[in-house]
Image (cartoon, rainbow, N blue to C red; front, side, top):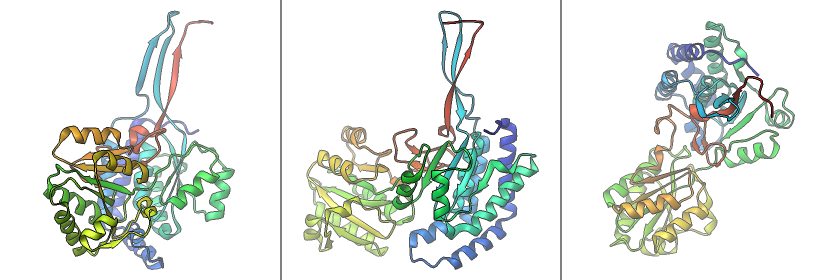
Length: 398
Protein backbone atom coordinates (compact mmCIF):
# COMPACT_ATOMS: atom_id res chain seq x y z
CA UNK A 1 0.00 0.00 0.00
CA UNK A 2 1.23 3.50 -0.83
CA UNK A 3 2.18 5.70 2.10
CA UNK A 4 -0.54 8.32 2.51
CA UNK A 5 0.53 11.72 1.20
CA UNK A 6 -0.07 14.87 3.29
CA UNK A 7 -3.25 16.69 2.31
CA UNK A 8 -1.21 19.71 1.17
CA UNK A 9 0.66 17.52 -1.32
CA UNK A 10 -2.54 15.92 -2.61
CA UNK A 11 -4.16 19.33 -3.11
CA UNK A 12 -1.06 20.67 -4.86
CA UNK A 13 -1.21 17.85 -7.42
CA UNK A 14 -4.92 18.51 -8.08
CA UNK A 15 -4.32 22.25 -8.49
CA UNK A 16 -1.44 21.60 -10.88
CA UNK A 17 -3.58 19.20 -12.91
CA UNK A 18 -6.27 21.88 -13.28
CA UNK A 19 -3.63 24.31 -14.60
CA UNK A 20 -2.28 21.72 -17.06
CA UNK A 21 -5.75 20.97 -18.43
CA UNK A 22 -6.23 24.67 -19.18
CA UNK A 23 -2.75 24.96 -20.67
CA UNK A 24 -3.21 21.89 -22.92
CA UNK A 25 -6.84 22.56 -23.80
CA UNK A 26 -6.25 22.74 -27.56
CA UNK A 27 -4.03 19.65 -27.62
CA UNK A 28 -6.62 17.63 -25.68
CA UNK A 29 -9.39 18.58 -28.13
CA UNK A 30 -7.15 17.81 -31.13
CA UNK A 31 -6.27 14.38 -29.71
CA UNK A 32 -9.92 13.71 -28.95
CA UNK A 33 -10.85 14.49 -32.57
CA UNK A 34 -8.59 11.58 -33.59
CA UNK A 35 -10.54 9.26 -31.27
CA UNK A 36 -13.80 10.53 -32.77
CA UNK A 37 -12.47 10.00 -36.30
CA UNK A 38 -11.42 6.45 -35.40
CA UNK A 39 -14.82 5.62 -33.88
CA UNK A 40 -16.73 3.54 -36.40
CA UNK A 41 -19.82 2.66 -34.34
CA UNK A 42 -23.32 4.06 -34.71
CA UNK A 43 -24.05 4.47 -30.99
CA UNK A 44 -25.10 8.11 -30.61
CA UNK A 45 -24.85 8.03 -26.81
CA UNK A 46 -21.35 6.54 -26.96
CA UNK A 47 -20.27 9.25 -29.38
CA UNK A 48 -21.62 12.02 -27.13
CA UNK A 49 -19.77 10.57 -24.14
CA UNK A 50 -16.59 10.29 -26.20
CA UNK A 51 -16.54 13.94 -27.30
CA UNK A 52 -14.29 16.35 -25.39
CA UNK A 53 -15.16 19.99 -26.11
CA UNK A 54 -14.53 23.22 -24.17
CA UNK A 55 -17.54 22.61 -21.94
CA UNK A 56 -16.22 19.16 -20.97
CA UNK A 57 -12.77 20.57 -20.21
CA UNK A 58 -14.35 23.37 -18.16
CA UNK A 59 -16.15 20.65 -16.20
CA UNK A 60 -12.92 18.71 -15.61
CA UNK A 61 -11.17 21.83 -14.32
CA UNK A 62 -14.10 22.79 -12.09
CA UNK A 63 -14.20 19.26 -10.66
CA UNK A 64 -10.52 19.48 -9.68
CA UNK A 65 -10.96 22.94 -8.19
CA UNK A 66 -13.93 21.76 -6.11
CA UNK A 67 -12.00 18.68 -4.96
CA UNK A 68 -9.05 20.84 -3.93
CA UNK A 69 -11.26 23.04 -1.78
CA UNK A 70 -12.91 20.14 0.05
CA UNK A 71 -11.65 18.97 3.43
CA UNK A 72 -9.50 15.87 3.77
CA UNK A 73 -11.76 12.79 3.80
CA UNK A 74 -9.10 10.78 5.65
CA UNK A 75 -8.77 10.62 9.43
CA UNK A 76 -12.31 11.83 10.07
CA UNK A 77 -13.49 10.52 13.44
CA UNK A 78 -16.65 8.42 13.09
CA UNK A 79 -16.88 7.10 16.66
CA UNK A 80 -15.18 7.62 20.04
CA UNK A 81 -15.30 5.39 23.10
CA UNK A 82 -13.40 5.13 26.38
CA UNK A 83 -13.27 1.57 27.70
CA UNK A 84 -13.86 0.84 31.42
CA UNK A 85 -10.20 -0.18 31.61
CA UNK A 86 -9.03 3.21 30.32
CA UNK A 87 -8.31 2.32 26.68
CA UNK A 88 -9.12 5.14 24.27
CA UNK A 89 -10.96 3.84 21.19
CA UNK A 90 -11.71 5.75 18.00
CA UNK A 91 -12.92 4.77 14.54
CA UNK A 92 -11.61 6.92 11.69
CA UNK A 93 -11.93 7.07 7.92
CA UNK A 94 -9.07 5.47 5.98
CA UNK A 95 -8.04 4.97 2.35
CA UNK A 96 -8.96 1.76 0.55
CA UNK A 97 -5.51 1.43 -1.01
CA UNK A 98 -5.82 0.76 -4.75
CA UNK A 99 -9.00 1.29 -6.76
CA UNK A 100 -9.58 0.04 -10.30
CA UNK A 101 -12.19 1.83 -12.39
CA UNK A 102 -13.25 0.33 -15.71
CA UNK A 103 -15.23 2.69 -17.93
CA UNK A 104 -16.39 3.31 -21.48
CA UNK A 105 -15.83 6.22 -23.84
CA UNK A 106 -15.68 9.11 -21.34
CA UNK A 107 -12.29 10.83 -21.15
CA UNK A 108 -13.61 13.21 -18.46
CA UNK A 109 -13.80 10.20 -16.11
CA UNK A 110 -10.01 9.96 -16.41
CA UNK A 111 -9.84 13.33 -14.68
CA UNK A 112 -12.77 13.09 -12.29
CA UNK A 113 -12.22 9.52 -11.08
CA UNK A 114 -8.47 10.06 -10.86
CA UNK A 115 -8.97 13.22 -8.82
CA UNK A 116 -11.46 11.73 -6.36
CA UNK A 117 -9.36 8.61 -5.82
CA UNK A 118 -6.12 10.55 -5.37
CA UNK A 119 -7.59 13.14 -2.98
CA UNK A 120 -9.01 10.31 -0.85
CA UNK A 121 -5.53 8.77 -0.54
CA UNK A 122 -6.01 5.93 -3.02
CA UNK A 123 -3.91 4.76 -5.91
CA UNK A 124 -6.08 4.65 -9.05
CA UNK A 125 -5.89 2.16 -11.90
CA UNK A 126 -7.74 3.50 -14.93
CA UNK A 127 -9.03 1.13 -17.61
CA UNK A 128 -10.85 3.12 -20.28
CA UNK A 129 -12.42 1.89 -23.49
CA UNK A 130 -10.45 1.47 -26.71
CA UNK A 131 -12.59 4.15 -28.40
CA UNK A 132 -11.14 6.86 -26.10
CA UNK A 133 -7.57 5.53 -25.85
CA UNK A 134 -5.72 8.52 -27.32
CA UNK A 135 -7.65 11.03 -25.21
CA UNK A 136 -7.14 8.98 -22.06
CA UNK A 137 -3.40 8.53 -22.62
CA UNK A 138 -3.03 12.27 -23.20
CA UNK A 139 -4.87 13.06 -19.93
CA UNK A 140 -2.88 10.44 -17.98
CA UNK A 141 0.33 12.04 -19.28
CA UNK A 142 -0.88 15.30 -17.71
CA UNK A 143 -1.57 13.45 -14.44
CA UNK A 144 2.00 12.17 -14.50
CA UNK A 145 3.32 15.67 -15.14
CA UNK A 146 1.28 17.06 -12.23
CA UNK A 147 2.61 14.30 -9.96
CA UNK A 148 6.21 14.73 -11.13
CA UNK A 149 6.02 18.53 -10.69
CA UNK A 150 5.15 17.88 -7.03
CA UNK A 151 7.75 15.13 -6.43
CA UNK A 152 5.09 12.44 -6.21
CA UNK A 153 5.48 9.00 -7.85
CA UNK A 154 3.65 8.46 -11.14
CA UNK A 155 2.42 5.11 -9.84
CA UNK A 156 -0.42 6.89 -7.96
CA UNK A 157 -2.26 7.19 -11.32
CA UNK A 158 -1.78 4.28 -13.68
CA UNK A 159 -3.46 3.53 -17.01
CA UNK A 160 -4.11 -0.10 -17.96
CA UNK A 161 -3.99 -0.28 -21.75
CA UNK A 162 -5.49 -3.78 -21.86
CA UNK A 163 -7.70 -5.55 -24.36
CA UNK A 164 -10.67 -7.63 -23.19
CA UNK A 165 -8.66 -10.83 -22.64
CA UNK A 166 -5.93 -8.99 -20.75
CA UNK A 167 -8.55 -7.24 -18.62
CA UNK A 168 -10.21 -10.56 -17.79
CA UNK A 169 -6.85 -12.06 -16.83
CA UNK A 170 -6.10 -9.07 -14.57
CA UNK A 171 -9.51 -9.30 -12.87
CA UNK A 172 -9.06 -13.01 -12.20
CA UNK A 173 -5.40 -12.83 -11.15
CA UNK A 174 -4.35 -9.23 -10.49
CA UNK A 175 -0.65 -8.58 -10.92
CA UNK A 176 -0.87 -6.04 -8.10
CA UNK A 177 -3.11 -5.69 -5.06
CA UNK A 178 -6.52 -4.21 -5.88
CA UNK A 179 -8.89 -3.32 -3.02
CA UNK A 180 -11.98 -2.16 -4.91
CA UNK A 181 -13.29 -2.25 -8.49
CA UNK A 182 -15.84 0.16 -9.94
CA UNK A 183 -17.25 -0.71 -13.38
CA UNK A 184 -18.83 2.36 -14.95
CA UNK A 185 -20.76 1.61 -18.13
CA UNK A 186 -23.40 -0.60 -19.68
CA UNK A 187 -24.83 -3.84 -18.35
CA UNK A 188 -22.46 -5.98 -20.45
CA UNK A 189 -19.43 -4.31 -18.86
CA UNK A 190 -20.88 -4.62 -15.35
CA UNK A 191 -21.74 -8.31 -15.80
CA UNK A 192 -18.26 -8.99 -17.24
CA UNK A 193 -16.56 -7.39 -14.21
CA UNK A 194 -18.82 -9.09 -11.65
CA UNK A 195 -18.20 -12.47 -13.29
CA UNK A 196 -14.42 -12.27 -13.26
CA UNK A 197 -13.46 -9.98 -10.34
CA UNK A 198 -11.81 -11.46 -7.26
CA UNK A 199 -12.21 -8.41 -5.01
CA UNK A 200 -15.19 -6.23 -3.98
CA UNK A 201 -17.11 -4.50 -6.79
CA UNK A 202 -19.33 -1.41 -6.52
CA UNK A 203 -21.84 -1.54 -9.36
CA UNK A 204 -22.47 1.71 -11.19
CA UNK A 205 -25.63 0.37 -12.79
CA UNK A 206 -28.09 1.28 -15.48
CA UNK A 207 -30.48 4.20 -15.30
CA UNK A 208 -33.97 3.45 -16.67
CA UNK A 209 -35.40 6.32 -14.66
CA UNK A 210 -39.10 7.07 -14.13
CA UNK A 211 -41.24 10.19 -13.74
CA UNK A 212 -44.67 9.70 -12.19
CA UNK A 213 -47.26 12.42 -12.89
CA UNK A 214 -49.71 12.27 -9.97
CA UNK A 215 -53.34 13.46 -10.27
CA UNK A 216 -52.43 16.64 -8.32
CA UNK A 217 -49.48 17.57 -10.54
CA UNK A 218 -48.63 21.05 -11.77
CA UNK A 219 -48.76 20.20 -15.48
CA UNK A 220 -46.40 22.98 -16.61
CA UNK A 221 -43.76 21.68 -14.20
CA UNK A 222 -44.46 18.09 -15.24
CA UNK A 223 -43.99 18.87 -18.93
CA UNK A 224 -40.77 20.84 -18.34
CA UNK A 225 -39.32 18.08 -16.13
CA UNK A 226 -40.16 15.35 -18.66
CA UNK A 227 -38.66 17.31 -21.56
CA UNK A 228 -35.50 18.09 -19.59
CA UNK A 229 -35.11 14.49 -18.44
CA UNK A 230 -35.48 13.05 -21.94
CA UNK A 231 -33.95 15.61 -24.31
CA UNK A 232 -31.19 17.54 -22.50
CA UNK A 233 -28.66 14.67 -22.73
CA UNK A 234 -29.61 11.17 -23.90
CA UNK A 235 -26.18 9.66 -23.23
CA UNK A 236 -26.19 9.77 -19.43
CA UNK A 237 -27.49 7.35 -16.80
CA UNK A 238 -29.68 10.04 -15.18
CA UNK A 239 -31.71 10.58 -18.38
CA UNK A 240 -35.42 9.78 -18.39
CA UNK A 241 -36.79 6.64 -20.06
CA UNK A 242 -40.28 6.07 -18.63
CA UNK A 243 -43.28 8.26 -17.76
CA UNK A 244 -46.28 7.07 -15.75
CA UNK A 245 -49.49 9.13 -15.89
CA UNK A 246 -52.10 8.89 -13.13
CA UNK A 247 -55.45 8.19 -14.84
CA UNK A 248 -57.14 10.12 -12.02
CA UNK A 249 -55.50 13.26 -13.46
CA UNK A 250 -58.30 15.41 -14.98
CA UNK A 251 -58.12 15.25 -18.79
CA UNK A 252 -55.05 13.01 -18.64
CA UNK A 253 -55.45 12.14 -22.33
CA UNK A 254 -55.11 15.80 -23.37
CA UNK A 255 -51.99 16.25 -21.25
CA UNK A 256 -50.46 13.01 -22.54
CA UNK A 257 -51.01 14.17 -26.15
CA UNK A 258 -49.28 17.45 -25.25
CA UNK A 259 -46.24 15.55 -23.90
CA UNK A 260 -46.08 13.43 -27.04
CA UNK A 261 -46.31 16.47 -29.33
CA UNK A 262 -43.47 18.24 -27.49
CA UNK A 263 -41.26 15.11 -27.47
CA UNK A 264 -41.81 14.54 -31.18
CA UNK A 265 -40.50 18.06 -31.89
CA UNK A 266 -37.17 16.70 -30.61
CA UNK A 267 -37.52 13.57 -32.78
CA UNK A 268 -38.10 11.37 -29.72
CA UNK A 269 -39.72 8.03 -30.56
CA UNK A 270 -42.71 7.69 -28.23
CA UNK A 271 -44.21 4.32 -27.38
CA UNK A 272 -47.25 3.80 -25.18
CA UNK A 273 -48.85 1.07 -23.14
CA UNK A 274 -52.17 -0.18 -24.57
CA UNK A 275 -54.15 2.56 -22.80
CA UNK A 276 -51.91 5.41 -24.01
CA UNK A 277 -51.64 3.97 -27.52
CA UNK A 278 -55.44 3.78 -27.81
CA UNK A 279 -55.94 7.31 -26.41
CA UNK A 280 -53.24 9.07 -28.43
CA UNK A 281 -52.47 7.00 -31.50
CA UNK A 282 -48.80 6.36 -30.72
CA UNK A 283 -47.37 2.92 -31.37
CA UNK A 284 -48.04 0.41 -28.58
CA UNK A 285 -45.19 -1.44 -26.85
CA UNK A 286 -44.86 -5.03 -28.09
CA UNK A 287 -43.74 -6.56 -24.78
CA UNK A 288 -43.62 -5.60 -21.10
CA UNK A 289 -39.89 -6.41 -21.18
CA UNK A 290 -39.33 -2.93 -22.66
CA UNK A 291 -40.13 -1.50 -19.21
CA UNK A 292 -36.77 -2.92 -18.03
CA UNK A 293 -34.74 -1.23 -20.79
CA UNK A 294 -32.43 1.75 -20.47
CA UNK A 295 -32.53 3.45 -23.88
CA UNK A 296 -29.65 5.99 -24.02
CA UNK A 297 -31.45 7.21 -27.12
CA UNK A 298 -34.23 9.52 -28.30
CA UNK A 299 -36.85 7.04 -27.16
CA UNK A 300 -39.39 6.97 -24.33
CA UNK A 301 -42.27 4.85 -23.05
CA UNK A 302 -45.40 6.43 -21.57
CA UNK A 303 -47.80 4.36 -19.52
CA UNK A 304 -50.69 4.85 -17.11
CA UNK A 305 -51.46 3.82 -13.55
CA UNK A 306 -54.68 3.81 -11.55
CA UNK A 307 -53.13 4.71 -8.19
CA UNK A 308 -50.01 5.97 -6.44
CA UNK A 309 -49.39 2.48 -5.05
CA UNK A 310 -49.55 0.98 -8.52
CA UNK A 311 -46.98 3.55 -9.72
CA UNK A 312 -44.63 2.71 -6.83
CA UNK A 313 -44.93 -1.02 -7.49
CA UNK A 314 -44.31 -0.60 -11.22
CA UNK A 315 -41.23 1.56 -10.66
CA UNK A 316 -39.82 -0.87 -8.09
CA UNK A 317 -40.36 -3.78 -10.48
CA UNK A 318 -38.80 -2.31 -13.60
CA UNK A 319 -36.42 0.55 -12.76
CA UNK A 320 -32.64 0.25 -12.56
CA UNK A 321 -32.48 1.41 -8.95
CA UNK A 322 -31.10 4.80 -10.04
CA UNK A 323 -33.60 7.70 -9.94
CA UNK A 324 -37.35 8.33 -9.84
CA UNK A 325 -39.40 11.51 -9.59
CA UNK A 326 -42.98 12.31 -8.59
CA UNK A 327 -44.71 15.43 -9.87
CA UNK A 328 -47.43 16.53 -7.45
CA UNK A 329 -48.64 19.47 -5.36
CA UNK A 330 -49.54 17.04 -2.55
CA UNK A 331 -46.59 16.89 -0.13
CA UNK A 332 -47.99 13.91 1.78
CA UNK A 333 -48.30 11.78 -1.35
CA UNK A 334 -44.84 12.92 -2.45
CA UNK A 335 -43.29 11.87 0.86
CA UNK A 336 -44.97 8.46 0.73
CA UNK A 337 -43.72 7.96 -2.83
CA UNK A 338 -40.17 9.00 -1.91
CA UNK A 339 -40.03 6.71 1.12
CA UNK A 340 -41.32 3.65 -0.75
CA UNK A 341 -39.65 3.88 -4.15
CA UNK A 342 -36.48 1.77 -4.05
CA UNK A 343 -34.01 3.94 -5.97
CA UNK A 344 -30.73 5.61 -5.01
CA UNK A 345 -32.24 9.07 -5.60
CA UNK A 346 -35.89 10.10 -5.27
CA UNK A 347 -37.25 13.46 -6.42
CA UNK A 348 -40.29 15.63 -5.78
CA UNK A 349 -41.03 18.09 -8.60
CA UNK A 350 -37.54 17.99 -10.10
CA UNK A 351 -35.69 16.35 -12.99
CA UNK A 352 -33.79 13.08 -12.59
CA UNK A 353 -30.95 14.79 -14.46
CA UNK A 354 -29.69 16.14 -11.12
CA UNK A 355 -28.44 12.71 -9.97
CA UNK A 356 -24.83 13.73 -10.38
CA UNK A 357 -22.06 14.25 -7.85
CA UNK A 358 -21.40 17.83 -8.91
CA UNK A 359 -25.09 18.77 -8.89
CA UNK A 360 -25.68 17.21 -5.47
CA UNK A 361 -22.81 19.10 -3.86
CA UNK A 362 -20.10 16.42 -3.93
CA UNK A 363 -17.77 18.14 -6.41
CA UNK A 364 -17.95 15.28 -8.89
CA UNK A 365 -18.27 11.53 -8.54
CA UNK A 366 -16.33 8.36 -9.14
CA UNK A 367 -19.55 6.68 -10.31
CA UNK A 368 -23.24 6.48 -9.42
CA UNK A 369 -23.81 3.31 -7.45
CA UNK A 370 -27.04 1.35 -7.71
CA UNK A 371 -25.72 -1.04 -5.06
CA UNK A 372 -26.66 -0.58 -1.42
CA UNK A 373 -23.19 -1.46 -0.12
CA UNK A 374 -20.87 0.25 0.43
CA UNK A 375 -22.34 3.47 -0.95
CA UNK A 376 -25.52 4.26 -2.86
CA UNK A 377 -25.94 6.99 -5.47
CA UNK A 378 -23.10 9.34 -6.45
CA UNK A 379 -19.79 8.19 -4.96
CA UNK A 380 -18.00 11.37 -3.93
CA UNK A 381 -14.79 12.11 -2.15
CA UNK A 382 -16.19 11.39 1.31
CA UNK A 383 -17.53 7.98 0.20
CA UNK A 384 -14.32 6.63 -1.31
CA UNK A 385 -12.97 5.69 2.09
CA UNK A 386 -13.21 2.71 4.39
CA UNK A 387 -12.65 2.90 8.16
CA UNK A 388 -10.07 1.80 10.68
CA UNK A 389 -10.08 1.33 14.47
CA UNK A 390 -7.44 3.07 16.59
CA UNK A 391 -7.03 1.77 20.16
CA UNK A 392 -4.65 3.47 22.60
CA UNK A 393 -3.73 1.48 25.70
CA UNK A 394 -1.27 1.41 28.57
CA UNK A 395 -0.64 -2.30 29.01
CA UNK A 396 -4.29 -3.47 29.21
CA UNK A 397 -4.91 -7.19 28.76
CA UNK A 398 -8.14 -9.10 28.47
